[in-house]
Amino acid sequence: MRKQLLLLGTIFIFSMLTVACGGYSSSDGDNNEGADAGGGADNPVAADIEQSSDEKREEDGTLQLRLGHQSPKETNYHRGSEKFVELVEEKTDGGVEIEIYPFRELGTDRELLEAMQFGTLDFGMISGPPISGFAKRTAVLDLPFLFEDWEHVNQFLGSDLEQEFYNLTEEANLKTFGTMARGFRHITTNEGPIETPEDMDGLTTRVIESPVYVESYEQLGASPQSMNWGDAYTALEQGAIDAQENTMDIIYDENVYDVQNHVSKTGIQFVFGFLMASKEQFDSWPEDVQTAVLEAGEEAMDEINKENEVHEAEYEELLEEEGMKIHEVDKEPFKEAIDSVYQNWTEDNGDEMLKEIQALSKN
Image (tube, rainbow, N blue to C red; front, side):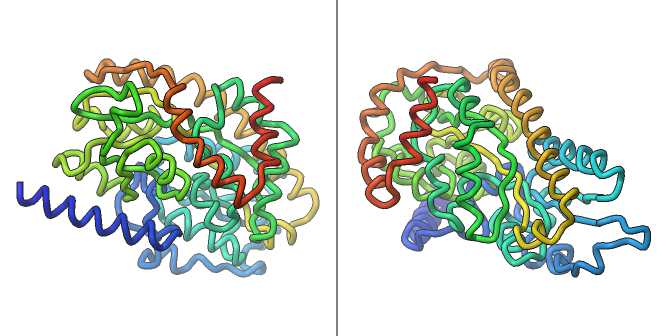
């Protein structure tokens, strides 16, 4: 009991410091899903991330580039990266070769974004929420209940509006050119399902380290705690926190069924990953390479998105086989409880893109 109280106290202090800072630490909440602590500045590969343009050219003229992501090789992040690399090499007849550095070998999402921003890394497959630390308005996709269903998400993918969203990162020297739709995030618990907002009252819940996520869960009455995934799993295991929210694949792949019994399909947020490049590096490549990269990014993400949509239902079945109970949830009472999140967003950022995304569901 004393150990649990000490751990809870530590988590509380850490969370308060994180929220007070209003930014992202190097151990981002969602950034560490599927990754143990490691990588970052102390990693020898990360320390050697800088590479001049001359060094990128082999004697035969082949352009050698790097792509970093922070997830294990078994994830959709890695599968999408591999497909992208395969297509680029095919479209350039082997003139461009891209080496993938998975599992935080080159650091967390934040570190990968910084490296691309400064032109010392070519590509990254990045979780959506941390990007708003570099381009604030991209957090529009973090808003609760923004997307009604996968059909609504698919209306956004490939639309002119998706391209407008990509443009939001240009001023931060980041080139966005591919969207991976990961899925809806649901709450897991031990004591029983989440059926109404009242069930979330005081519920200590691990969330992605995103101001919009934190605000959303606060408005629903929960006590959101931003922490990396390794700490979250330990806290769940020891009973220091009550719940966490995640996509079905992460709930299964990270064995949450060993420490939690219920999945409540709250779907409060839909989460994306983005294929990105250093704009500085992208602009320096020949036009044919730029074209190949853009085409390959779109094609690779189209393929992985079809898999993700299908796999979401498959993961539900796998979780049930492991003994978890899956609960459908009436979302309307939850939507009514988060009006202030939208009000605060529009006051700070306007509502033009928000309304355009919402209108896609009517197409």
